[in-house]
Image (cartoon, rainbow, N blue to C red; front, side, top):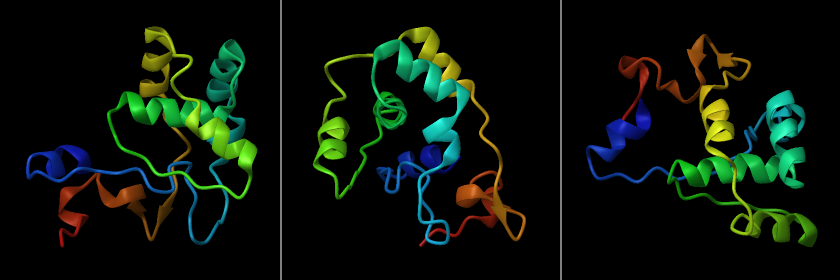
Length: 120
């Protein structure tokens, strides 16, 4: 995929709009905010589904950027280190297949087919 391609060339992938925000949608992924898996894991740790998504990203060792106009949400975004997900939860999150979305039949991030990716 795109991450391994970049890593092999010394490029660090960073999670920007890590919650699935899109320019045309303007909001976080419903699967992250309200999905059965993220909701169940969040309840088990008494944290938000957003925190589960951000924790999963950190478990992939991907740097991430968050933003919010809410001080409470920013505090939640920073509180990723006082708790942890289990190995089984991590595996379930790794195996989760979110609903597909595409534009002009090109997969999200254009990484499923390397021929469609453009390297600048």
